Length: 472
Ligand SMILES: NC(=O)c1ccc[n+]([C@@H]2O[C@H](COP(=O)([O-])OP(=O)(O)OC[C@H]3O[C@@H](n4cnc5c(N)ncnc54)[C@H](O)[C@@H]3O)[C@@H](O)[C@H]2O)c1
Image (cartoon, rainbow, N blue to C red; front, side, top):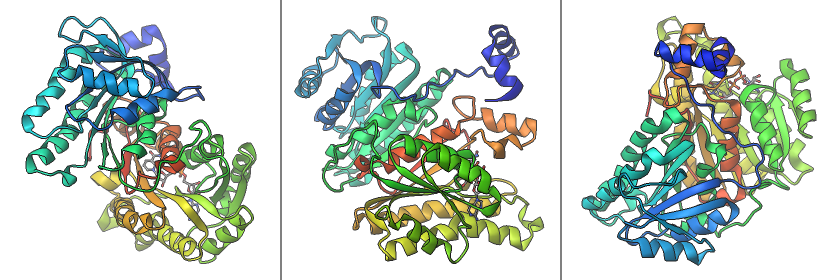
């Protein structure tokens, strides 16, 4: 949010005026400010029979300040209680029958990994219907499942895929109070790798991530880290790091402990150096489309023992409807937003500049998913990024490297400030949260992908869009 509208929202009378004329009055989202715990509050946990993630969930919550509850009326109450106790929780049994719920909750988590038959889906209704109104603003809903294509029957596949439709609908019902709903699918045998995703979803770091699906797949061993400084001793490079989203990515990665190289074009040199100075990083002036840039990056990071994280953030728009688009608009956009990423990665991989356990994160866009008038070049490039990430994930897994993408929606930057008022207002409000996101929301998602304990998070595309109503 910005300008006049934001001022009105922050003022009690202004809010009432906006409400009275039927305009959206979004809740201010709670974002991460370096809290000692990733989650603080009441969490209600439900589960199906044979749920497989309760132990890992319980273990993950040891780093939170959570009071855990389980529904007394659940068929599997004893199973939930035992699993939570196994990892040091002291869960409280609470009456969750309709009309009898006395607690307020900051998170509702349901482990649906044991669903086999479509009749099991009724458990979603039984768990969520009585308690959904007791979810606090800025609350979290998390549903845990297994990837549907790894199911052992068609009926189970239907159940698992159902979780997406269910959680996306809940996200739309609770978005107005700044609350979010997501699904995490965890492959059999990858349960021990699910903590980083659980932590991200439950924390304020995912404030503007809504209605999304995160897949956790089998990888190596569980990597234990200090989640408050997960990138200690890591070296990262952020392209387009002089301003906007890139600047925020650089500062969040530095906050998380990484030595950060920020790269941008000559024209941005003063801003780039300022960013580098502020985060104790290094400024690299270069054009990502230039032939010499991959080698320049490799030379620069050599003294730090190579690169652990590369974030391909630099991007441009050159908008025109296809019939009016000059050829160089097409060429530049594809080159900067897509081809140069491939060229740089190829060089870094071939020359072993990207270390084992490396992380590649690409920045796509919601318009790459939904398409946009006047952006055939941009949407082509950003959809290409998604295809590239999905294909490369399998190749890179062999080298213990992950590759993922974020697809931002409407993020408040200099780029979006330049959009005419009415178009900007529509773009900003057309999501479940009725507001634009901040660069830090994209940056936090990238930091989650970059963390060493996200080694099971590979080939994902997460939209950071407050569940934008267009696209997926
Ligand atoms: N702002 C949004 O709402 C939004 C939405 C979806 C996707 N994105 C994507 O997020 C990324 C960052 O967006 P932003 O809003 O911060 O944009 P921005 O224009 O503020 O920043 C982009 C940066 O990339 C740099 N850059 C451009 N061409 C380059 C080149 N050839 N070599 C090196 N650097 C180059 C620019 O100098 C600039 O500093 C882009 O990839 C953009 O497409 C933004």
